[in-house]
Length: 367
Image 1 (tube, one colour):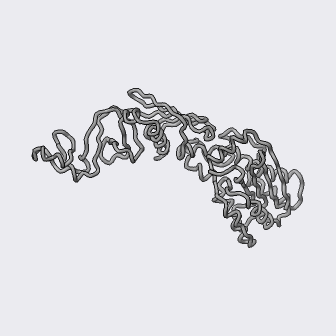
Image 2 (image 1 turned 90 degrees about the vertical axis):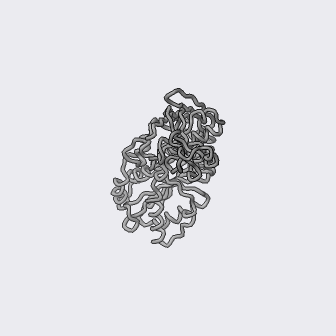
């Protein structure tokens, strides 16, 4: 087994440290980036020839490559990597839960190797985290090199992993520096690429766990505009602007978000869940509680049903995604999209408004 080390100084280390705490709830020194190279997809019928691992320490990036230079060092590679993982708590990879980790586990079983240090790591699979956001990026696929291009990241390596299988086989038969350079470079750029695209996870956080630092709200008769500032460490690296199925528009870049929501001026209905305790008044087109129904002539009232147990309100409304909000309005019974009055949001506290913004973001991509 051949071991290759690289060390790189990095700028903005304090920014990176804080980002890791927000993203992963752990210190950046406890996180390991990882990628493997093999001669095939099946662990049973192929060879593991390279494991690359990268970590942060002392304001520097440290990349280590464990190279199976003779074709017979699989066991040594896995044993060494398992030992290497001992001081880390998290491991970051790209599609590793589908390929890299199961591959190593199968190889470890074949060679009867303990990999408990690897198995104890918390897995962060970038591919798995972002695959449901493919439509947001407008990409044909979510391959690592595709995402790198999307984010404007350049790599020195120009080879496909499949092309290097033959290079490795020829290297084992007759080693030379150029073949070794190509094999190591591909793995090197894959791992360095992971560190550069890690901020793509911020897109998920924008919709799942947004941190709103400040905001402002304005409106007119047709739209509600929300301007929000998020935590600077959870910046959006490449601008997104999109309108969802509910007509809500988002423009987000860096740590700034603009949301534009449609405003409707209409007569909507607030339905009461305990309809059995209500009467419906056909002439007034409204429901009243049975406690006051005694004052209404029996000819002018009827037992309420789920569909007519409501009071109608003519007002200005905005979309509501908070299922716990008490005064929601619907166009018709059973509608999935609910509303609240515009004034109920505009006149509410900052905390209530931020809760509303977060709920809009949580539901923005739902179909």
